[in-house]
Image (cartoon, rainbow, N blue to C red):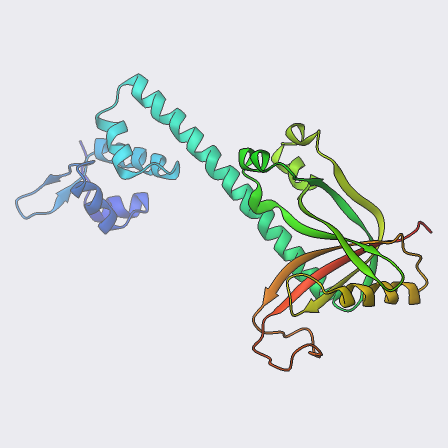
Length: 266
């Protein structure tokens, strides 16, 4: 039977010599050693190395691979595979949640760049009001909720009437948990005057909201009398907002807030 040197096996399988020695040290493979100390690998060693590479691709640990190859029965092997499937499903769910976060943050940055001190006419997308903390814990979505304030706009006056934990219906659809949320009220506005402001606080001041309301009216829009604000993110250094009317200290964090003011249909 043909035997191979460590260099030949390394080249054929694309494994470094250090990796081959590591597997040997862990006892997963045991190549023969000649009198001069050189290792000789058989076909069986090569076959076992391919098995190791296969299970490593499936994210099994070295200890688990050793157990699979040397110490597992058929039933224990099947059990390990099932456990690995469940583990990977949890990882996928975690990565899916991370991707939702990243995509949301990416959109926030775009909104800040596009609409800081500028406006757009857009809907306030559909949200669930998450007013049951036990449901939030059950669904494990607290980190995917957003805090929004609702205001009532009067004659140059403003009153905060509520504060919500909101959960996006788009996110619920992606996570396939719409059934669990079907009894929850929605907050949704089809047409809003939208803008992003830079503030010295996580929550917009009354005057900042009124300034946007007056701006909307000056642009010819008729307000419905409510407003919604949500904190986007803060930055240690403001490299977008060129003027700092609220603070001359450029080391003070900047808080970006989006504002939705529902308007009458055109």
